[in-house]
Image 1 (cartoon, rainbow, N blue to C red):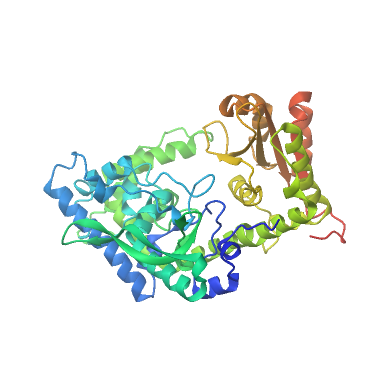
Image 2: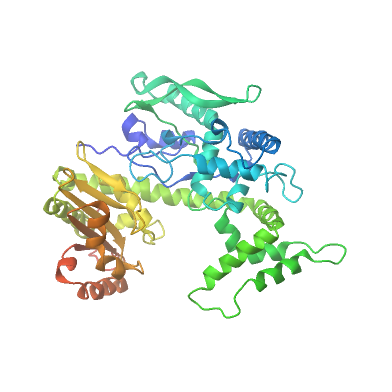
Length: 495
């Protein structure tokens, strides 16, 4: 079989054509952890991007006026606030496939309440250069990059459809494209409602596919984010100008912030206490939010640079390296091995271990500068792209609070195996491995669990060996260690 992971594979378009067009070659197996950052619209030199940002702000002003005219604690009109995710972009947080939660009642209620309350002056800011959708994530807990990205994507859907339409008409044969009506693609301000619009788009498996411009995407946090505000909090306070009358807002904020910190700082609780003090200070002095946004506006060129670095990282691991890994596994017979039971899953993992350790596959887990993949979430995403088979059920399960995402291989409810990929550098590795069997059997109703641990350094290898010695034999047997070190391989190993 030939493994098809990406848009370029499914539609037979060379990746270089997609990249020259300015789009990202998305995976059509599972969502990639990339997000649309509205700040990249705001700061762009492209007039069409700046117009998109202006349209987003205009829509929020429309909602603000509606919220101000009514009671902010009343239920918002869901057709204006709540939207299903635009899953056809294949970007975001979905564990398997491309179906995400979308913008539901919680998001709608928070936006409606804040536009009628603390954001009542939205659009009339005097400190910042402009208004920003991301302001919502600074004042409302639970509104993170995924929600901001989903809302931005929804509000620029018409542009994304036109962007993809033009590509499809120019580069795809008729059999790969279809004229479809996209629901809620255009907002009619006069009527105050969303309207559908028809486009010719790539089409597969009963649904259309959307491409997203590369230069709108980032990963990790948005440029304006709650995490960024916490990280830069003291620096932002220092940047607040001293008032001309001699009064100092900066000094008042600094005193209040320090008064909220515990007198005795323990190393264990210092970060938690700092976050609590920051949140309290923001409630007392919400003007800090505008100063933070202005601080981020003034350093906008860094946002563009960082987004490019993060896109390059994503392309390297999730497109280039994952495709090489899938090809190597295909040549080794990985995709021909049946699985579903514990023994069959172990056979497949042994193939994977052999490819990485003996066939040079370890190289695929390092970036262009030679640094190994650093996050378990990235390992999970990479394996999600290659842990596939035609006609066989493999599921990614969402984090259930007892551990990170895992793969469930099953032949029905009575024959289920969980496979978990971990980094040896995980500080909780010993704790996770010690309770893995009971945790996964209980949470997933699986009959067995296997943990695959990736090792990148000699210190990691020694640490894993110590952890395994402390495990009972039955738990130790359920752990497979894969040596992905680059410093102990023969020069002749090949990928």
